[in-house]
Image (cartoon, helix red, strand yellow):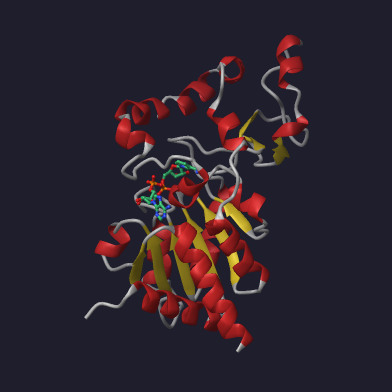
Length: 274
Ligand code: NAD
């Protein structure tokens, strides 16, 4: 007989309360309740408009070909997707993960999201695997800069694009990782390290089909080299994913992250207080 949602939430809370090194992985699904569409859910941007997926692959080659022209084209766009993301607010799912970190249960949150909502919710130990809209990154040395430290209107008027790194004079781009662009080496390395080290991995709102991020549950779930046993891998998602179907995850708690994650956090707190 399969377990009820309440029993699965209780199991997850038990594993997290006992964990020595728990980490969370998140994807676009955790932000749909903040009004940001995901890509591959039933109302996803690409589910509704497959051509948008093909267009997304043109951005990075265009940047490599002509950084100055790329910046001018980006700044000429009437209302960018970035501006609507900047207005979004964190939801109860983001706050629940920040709370689990605050009480010492979660050691790291690794997100594919670029929307900066984990940061807004208060998560501190955050690895933004696909970058963030709130920063620029040097293409040569990976140095990051807050985006709001640049006056792009003035740089455009003074013909000073592209922006350059003050450390090494490399070209700056958005920190967001574009399709076809390698994951920044510092983030890739650290994410791999914590996935190898974790004993519990809580995966929230991802279809787990974008690589190399989708490898991280496989590293944890199958037991990396030098480990005595695999981590407990728990999914919270609206629908089953390849991780569910291939039994990489131990179980799926099927539902909304905005409802299930606060329930897990509350159950963990109750166990730690008992
Ligand atoms: P995805 O769109 O491929 O999958 C999202 C998954 O979350 C789906 O399985 C969907 O059913 C599920 N889901 C949707 N709403 C949910 C909810 N409220 N509760 C629980 N589950 C829910 O997303 P992905 O796996 O993150 O891959 C998409 C890629 O696109 C990532 O690389 C990410 O960087 C990027 N992206 C980011 C954002 C963002 O920053 N918010 C938004 C769209 C896409």
